[in-house]
Structure formats: structure tokens, C-alpha cells
Image 1 (spheres, rainbow, N blue to C red):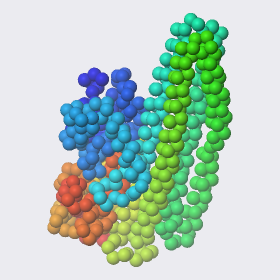
Image 2 (cartoon, helix red, strand yellow):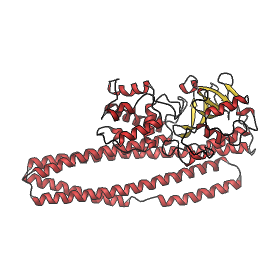
Image 3 (tube, rainbow, N blue to C red):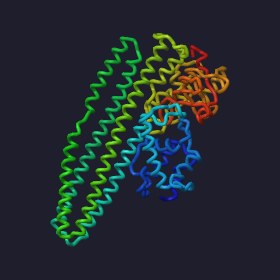
Image 4 (tube, rainbow, N blue to C red):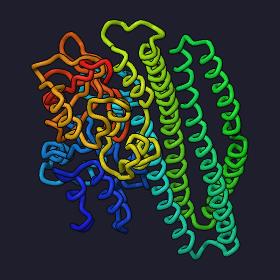
Amino acid sequence: MSDKFSLQNLFKAGVTREQFIDNYKQIQNSGENLDGISLFSTEMSDNQIGTVFDFVASDKTGNDNDKLSDNDVKKLASFDGDNKSISDADLNKLYDNMQEAVKKSLVTTNQSDCDTPVMTPAETLDTLKLLRFTKTSTAEMKKTQLKQEIDNLMNKSSKISDELKKEYQETKTKIAQTEQQIKQKEKEAQDNQEKLLSVNEQIARKKGQLNGTTDEKERKSIQNDIDNLSYSATKYKTSDSDIVALNQKLSSYKHNMETIADKVASTDSKTGQEIKNKQNQIKQIDANLQTELKSIDSQIKSAEDMQMKLLMQSSQDSAQYSEIANGKVPDDGHVGKTAAQALSNATSQIGVRELTGHNDGAEIAKYRNGVDNHASWCASFVSWCYKGNNVFGYQASVGGIMSVAKQKGLYSAKGTYTPKAGDVMIQKNGASHTGIVESVDADGTIHTIEGNSSNQVKRCTYKKGSRGYNQISGFVRMSDSEQA
């Protein structure tokens, strides 16, 4: 790889998540030979590239403005025992670590030991799909090389008859055509699966709302929405019968190819044996890939189930906060009506993600109060959750929220005040990140809901002494004003 597109420029201290995505795509599209590097073996979406950044940036606080640190770069470079530069071997080790992290994320959802969850279900899905694509592409590259070697053996042997070579070429063409048909069918099935997942996410949110409300009229309306969504989901449920039939045809063609190898061996035993060896290698690659994909697909299903539970729970919380805000149920003693409405708005958005990892997407745009830009949106999200408030109104920057709160005497530095539900957390004196406090534990651990946290809306946790906690500078006391 040339210096212009070197890994050292990609994994460089000071690079932000958004810059990393752009730099990665530049290397991906550079035309450089990237064979042998697992993380470059397939074209990834922006969100999947961002997932790679999230794994490397181990010290991040949840803010998309976080950057790779010198320690992040040194740790990655040390994977192959050489701390001076990042190699292909380092990226392949990173790939292995990502697989292990996925397994752990499927076992536990405990968030108490870190500033932010190790992986949300959405991030787990991104990573699993990345791993699936990478494994498939790596296998295809190996098979393509072996097939080319078989072609060379067939062409260079003068002992093989033209008739047998013609039969080989015809069978090879049939295999290639059938494999292309299978890929097309699998792509259609995958597209339908993505659409079905989207509908199921909407259903999960509706079920959460249903569980969280006591109003019978509202419950009937929500149940009607669930029924309609469930009906629409049926058109995305596809049968795999076509793929099964094509695979059976492919198996028959591959068997014919093995028969051709036997015929070759009868006239050129050495060439025939070499071809058989390479055919067996291809069969082994296919068998190993199917075993790996079966495991990954099972994990994808688990991650999707986790995603549904997350969306259902957050929507249930949103409905319950809304009932507190509307006076339908009594406050539990620490969430005022104003805070409850803001938290209802915030929890209703958990799981919303950027479209491409560049501060974009229709859901993100609605937080911006009509401002059409690609700036960081954590402050916009907090403003949207507190829409209509008379403390800081709409602010597009963290500094703006903090400045107005100070002017109104509603800002307290960390250590001088114990935050309450609904207060606004400020990091780095307004120069970094913000979120809404949802609760505070007896030991001082702060739980928040934040926008623009690794390109999404999610719950985050800050334990005392952690990097993220240390970057908290203070709080806007929204709980001081019930009419805020």
C-alpha cells in the first residue's frame, strides 16, 4: 500500500469518527491492492466503518467528536508485536477481537462497568453483518484463485482432449450462472429481511407504548396500529424454495465438474490429481463458510431479538413518562412533570441512528429546528426533547445551552450539586457533549439519554472516576423550574 493511502494515515491520533469514515472510503476506492486484509475484503456501509472506529477508540466517551488517541494507535500497532506501525496483521487481529466482542455483547447487556454500553444491539447487528460480509468475501477470493489455478491446469495440459476442455468450459459457465442467480435471490431475500426488520422495529415500539399506557382509548388505537403493521409485514416474509432449488442445481453441476476431473485423470493423472486437490479445497472452503455463516446468522437473530426488546422497553418507558407528565399517574417522587415530558421525548427516540454516520438522516433533521446542516446534533437533540422550554429554548451547540443557563442562574458545576432526573449534563464546559440525566445512583453513577452518541440516540452510564465522568463539568438545573 502506498504512503498516500497507508494504514498509518487512517489509524492516526487526532482522527474523528467522521474523518475516519471518509479516510477509510478513500482507501477502499483507491485501487490499491488490499488482498489479505480482512477489514478491506468487502465494501462496507458508513455505519459499519464507524463501528470499526468505535472498536479502536476504546477511550471514547460516547461523543462523535471524540478522536483516536496516541494510546489507541499504539495498542492497535502492538497486535503483531511491533509498536511502530500498523500492519495487515494488526487489522486481522482487530477483526478477531471484534468477533469476540460480539459474542460477549450477546451474553450480557450490563452497562454498569463503562461510560456507555459496550455495544448496543444496533451496533452488534452492524458488526455481525460486517463479519458476515467479510467472511463471505474472503472465501470468494480464495475460491476465485483456486478456480483460476484449475483453469490454468486445464489449458496447459496437451493430453486433455478439446472435447473434454469444452465440457469443462460449459460446466464452468453453468456453475457461474447458477451462482449469480443464487446471489441475486439472496440479495432480494436480504432486502426483504431489512424491510421486515424495519416493520418489526415499529411493531416493537408500538407494543412498548401499549404496555406503558393505561388509557383504554389510546390502547385501542395502538393495537390497531400493531395489527396494520403486522399485516404489512407479511409481504416481506419470503420463501427460500427458489434458493434451495438453485443450490440443488448447483450441486449437480459441481458433481459434473468432479466427474470431469476423473476423466482428466484417466489421460493425465498428475493434472487430474492436482485439479481434484483444488476442487476439494474449494469444497472445504464452502463447508467451513456455511458452518461460520450458520453461527453468525444465529447471532444476528439474537441481536435482532435484543433490538426489539430494547425498542419495546424504551417505548414503554416513554409512555409511562408521558403519563406522569400528563398527570394520569402520580410522580414517583423524583421526576417532575417537566422532566417527565422531556424524558418521554428522549426515550421515544432511543435506537434512532444517523443514515450514513455523517450527522444526517430524516430523524436527525427533525431535531435541528429547521436548520439544514450536518453539524453535531447532541445539543439539538436535548433542545428537541425539551421543546418549548423557557430556560434555553432551542440551541444548536452545547456552549449555547450552558451560556443561557448560566445567565439565568440555573447552571451548577459538578461537585456542587447532585443532579436530578431531567437535568441537562454538560461536558468540557460546553465544548464537547451533552445529554439528559435520567437517574443517579446512590454511589454517584449518572445515567443519561443522549443524541449523537456514536451516531445514535442511546442510554449512557458514567461511573465516578471514569473518563467520561471526569469530562462532565456541570448540569443545567431544569428540575428547578416546573414550568421550564
